Amino acid sequence: MPKCQKPKGTLLQYVSDLIIRGIIATCLFMPLSLRLRMMGIFLRSVVSPSIGYKERALNNLSYIYPEMPIQEKTRIADAVSDNAGRTFIENYDILSLKARLRHIPIQGEGFLALKKAHAAGQPVLLVTGHFGNFEAPRAALVGLGYEIGGLYRPMANPYFNAHYADNMHRLSGPVFEQGRRGTTGLFRHIKHGGMGVLLFDIYDRKGTPIDFLGQPAPTLTSAAEIAIKTNAVLITMFGVRKQDGMNFDIILEAPITHSNPLDMTIEMTQRLEQMVKQFPEQWFWIHRRWKPERRMSIEDGGN
Image (cartoon, rainbow, N blue to C red; front, side, top):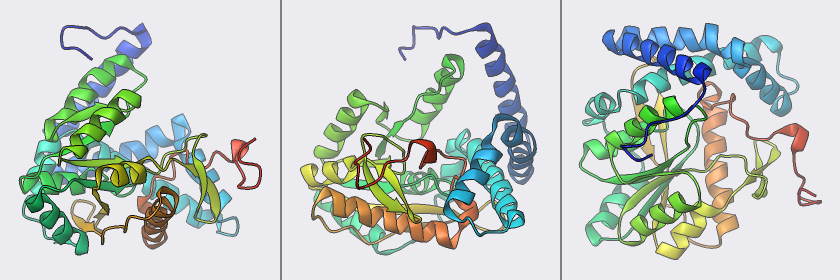
């Protein structure tokens, strides 16, 4: 949104944005540990039950794990909302997150591959899912001096989106709005030797049904296609929240070998699946990943 153009929306959207801004400002005034704890409680106890996040998480868990006891589903659903609240406020103080993670050891074979590619001027495409804090690995890398572009999904509330989009640009650029134009911009950035990050675990009815946690999830192969076309090193990365609720393990896994877009996307999906199985409380089960009522089968191709 151009700086000179003021957002236009409804009165309800304007008031809602004022409330959200007030909550954010209040939390950012608190010490870090209290800020994270309070936002986790707020999302878990107030927001999630009232806007349907908890119900959606329970439905998704029932869809994937029909035999799981309701007590366990409820525990995971509550933990997911707590993590979402912590992630939200962390990413609204993104420069502080970068400072916190600047000296954290980065694990995995992918970090060495990234450094080698950067030294040689070869593009790098990092991919991750809605897991842990998905901005934490990017913040850690930016703290080490790397410039990493990305995409963001615009918010429905134009008033909220105005400052949300501005916040997305604070960490590192270039950052593009999700869509054809934004994807093209990120593609050009990577093609010219840059680094970028994409979240690939997004439902898209035009995507190919790829098995995720035992059920087909329509998935775009865009990330793999970009990596192939730009000769980018393709690396899966994760920011795993530790039990203290504040710190992270930053993991860059071994690069995915270039083959064909479908096989590469299947591999990155399987890597995310392994993380979800290990830390089910950290994947965003509030996320519409399958949409069972509209799910596509491999046999009918979604028709």
